[in-house]
Image 1 (cartoon, rainbow, N blue to C red):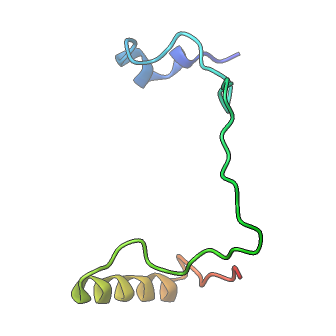
Image 2 (image 1 turned 120 degrees about the horizontal axis):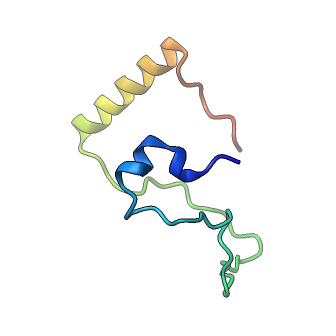
Length: 77
């Protein structure tokens, strides 16, 4: 079984990495959840505003990525 210490970067920073890795996801004593309101819809709003010049640059970059096939339009509802 490979060990985390077999990784070259780990041997450089032994003080940062634990001897054994916890499982994924880590075991937690308390589980948290968010109670949703029945029938509530998520809002469709940008998390923050952009200056017009920043927005134009973003749109230009997205268009270029679309044209080159690196990204595709979202089809989520």
